[in-house]
Image 1 (cartoon, one colour):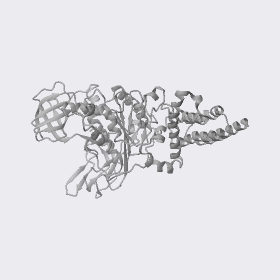
Image 2: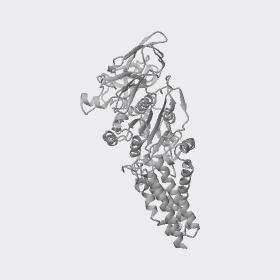
Image 3: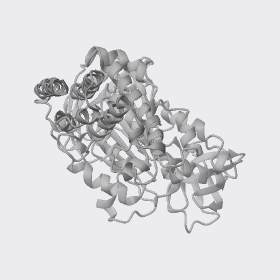
Image 4: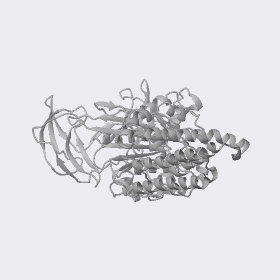
Length: 588
């Protein structure tokens, strides 16, 4: 264990000498107050340390002590429903111990050592196990079965194991490794945050992460194990969109990282999530959620670590065979923390002062997502989907963080302030957004939803693009200058925007739409377009076509419940055919 002393303090950066025996990324205890820090640079016996707590009042000459281990998280029962800071300190436990104000140097274990967990062994004495095997289960919440796994790198034979009630520090059994060593089997394990957890194989993205949000599922889908970015200016709905994804995405576990956002936004999350009811289980959403709270007024270095803390916890649940959705809000604030530390280290700045390695750090984070075959003889499949909000200054996505993110992610949900001001939510701009998973997911949609899904989606996108071109003409010469067929196209595009893409997050029915209902909605709008086009060619009046009473029913179809949607679809189709035939008879 290396010991040194402080020679310089510069905000969250502390430089200590006498640290020759320490290693890069070791966790250190700084000063007599034992503040937590991490070595990020070594020059001879001088170590540059980023400190995860307030450094005001530190003096040269105070001691610095290396723990000899890298920054790690504890992974075990107690994570679900927990609220942690950027370095996995449990905020609720700290509040119980010292009150509302976080004091420096406090040492509280990440996972409670007092809680008792009921462990049910799934392996027996004498069983051969390999890394990643499940040795038992703890029912952590009503909705999450926490699988106790053999740690990576450990293979051998179980010498003893017993079901019962245990605290985290009590061994549930013993295992004899291939080298003949006996090790205790514990309910929890540790893992360094900057190192991705191992798996057997990463799979191609062929299954969608269904979210129930029409503009996402239909227009710009994300795959299970995929990566997406939501850039947008202030007030465009990033946080509500992430709340909707956390609530409705078909994921077993949600990890929400509030890294550097405003304290009041994080307060909203902390207040709302326990009250939100999980639609799939009927329980509180917190019973399958882990929250990392590291707001903008907390130490900047811990903001940088919070991203890694969150994704390591997400990987742990992925290793159990679960589908995990990770929300990071926002990676821009994390990048600003990188920029501040880089500036204090006096590194050569890149574009707009960000470090030259910004792109590679972002890539290291997003590359840890994916759908994988996990370790262990069971060969389970788990997925980790990462969705990062980006907050570009002034909504300008040409800035470095947005551009570096776009080079890595496959889905871009571009939020538009103009749409938000028009009260069109989700304010995802259909002309600038894209998904590179569309082709790889096409087969799944055709097989599991409808053979026409992809062709209908492509037609709707084309109509929206043609509407944008026609709008330029309308601005110049007015709507009356358009042909009847173009007028009809503009009306259908308006129907797509207002009746399909617009979705009310706070309406009990419209907040979530199944793929089956989305398919019916697309077919209704396109059926109207096709049949109205044919009727127009037969000499019908465009004004009468636009004013058909059935259009009101098509528009209100989104408020029809899941159970009634098929009958209503058939009914509206029959009404459309009847009204068009009546219109032709009048024309004759």
